[in-house]
Image 1 (tube, rainbow, N blue to C red):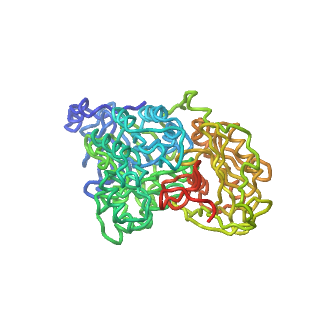
Image 2 (image 1 turned 30 degrees about the vertical axis):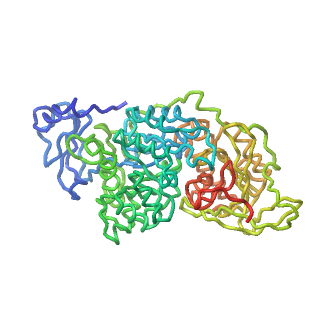
Image 3 (image 1 turned 60 degrees about the vertical axis):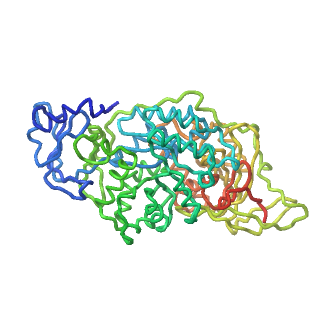
Length: 597
């Protein structure tokens, strides 16, 4: 792989190239330099690259061209620093780290800061180590944040594994760990949970960055206590006041545009309308499935979106490059086109629309005109990472029955309300009928069932509830072993026979996503690695994901990227109402609640 040498090992050569004493490996000529330090676009700029790093950036690099130097004429195009994704989860792409890199490199992404807490919830520290080691072998920069909340909310869910302070301290010694992953247990921080504070202390003792996750709309004392606890950034804001509050308290506001999280437009007004300093804002994706990556883009998509919201192009690029590098203490390595930094560069013919014409990573061309050039072989995962779906029994329709309180012919039930393009849910209520002692769904009012099937310890247990917002209008069921963050199996359906068929199907294939309707399988995405990731090529997975999305549409669902909403229904650290293997959870109070009012 294209590994980069430490600056100290190549400094003398960089100096010699800058002085013209030694020829460069690569020279890019006649470009418009997007300078993220000065905020300028500087025409007629040449760049000389040696040993995978920028050696010279200036008016002419003629003095650095030798007989063996490769020369690229930018023909007046823009020279943009390689794009950075400051917070994301590879597992949401449903592919391995290698395949994720293959998918995003043509879109101009050359650095990622990944939090593998999904695989951590299934496989524990060995799973995190698998992704850490794979990331270190990539031809782009992929740094790893050690998961800090496994499980995400102790006492409210049971995951497949548990990580603690000793695990965090050990991971801080690994070479590719950049910090602590998002601290999702925000009540734990605010109320001095020893485990949470111990993990943060271990991270800060290693002089690494603590990631944040404050998902509550309450910006009062709990928020202030959370900031005092040490998290340095937060990507859970959805309102302009969220971004303003975080930045004023010394945090970096991470604004995300994922497959289904559209949180940039509201929060960017903190800069465009309220005049806050943009250097405290960072763009990220958080969760993008493979279909988005292959078909729509990655960080280039986020930058274009931010520009479309009124942000100056150079400012948007700063938020996706230098701001992220500075936040993680990597300013001397990443995030700008400047001497000594890793030679990560995008050539683009237009700033507002940011077409990715060429991508250079560590001084080598890795993609051109949307096509990957770098050779990234498929990655094989060991046997212990597979076969992780343990249902304990063959499920039947009756496993999804919800018994009514004795003597009831109608009940008032709590219902999880899905919000399009946002991670939070609403806590709704619905009047439902009872037949033969079993509570019935209400398809006419878009109330269908949700079942969480325990899949780590083969208990055969199913937790049942109700959900609204998907719009399914035929007999159908959608099942997934991706269920952030505990990753049990989530089954949503209008027909309990289809729900059982879908659940059993995922048990057969070892995990994934499937859509059933009237006893027939409409789509299947196999995810054998921890029930979260495929071992197939990203474009193959994207095609299967597209078919899955289309199948959901055929069942009546018109939500944008509804699968992402489906996969978060068990995320008991984002308000308002969720489901876990322990029951229904009121996330506004961080306590279990009854299904019936």
